[in-house]
Image 1: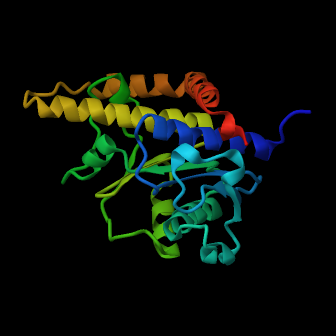
Image 2: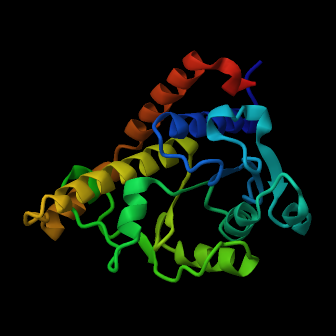
Length: 243
């Protein structure tokens, strides 16, 4: 008998936590990932408060209802996770997966006076005109109003570069979301390294950057395969992710 829809998403999301810890993109016991399991997007899975990504199992993920305010009072739900992910899943039913991180290079770019990702190579070009920017950081995002504000910024975009904070990506599947946030961090690593040389950086033309971004959008199977390979590696390293 095959896995149910929710069971498969639990495994995929749990594996994503393990992968992110494996590649060193996690932030202590903070940051959160969520995935919708209902058609309206309001029933969603979320990691429990302050559990290290490297230890998360499929059964650890909390099943929450974005319309149920009691979720905010649960001791195993982080207030910032509820504020951000709860509001996104309540307001944007088309968003199925939300990954929020503070990875070093992407966050460094988000901390610039002019946070932006110019297209200088194939990775950075993936994000040409495709990233929303938030420059209104005001402290911990622990209110519904702040979550609603962030959700509004995602209109028409699937990524949000959060000024002085970090990054958030959304996607139709866990695999696409993982590959996206991994490539975004890789792109920012390349960008910061190029800037650090002090030499002039050659920016791609708008035409080439747009062509490259569209090329990325045509290979979602690449993203899914990247995820499946990394997921299998996590399972081989520690099968408890499936528990």
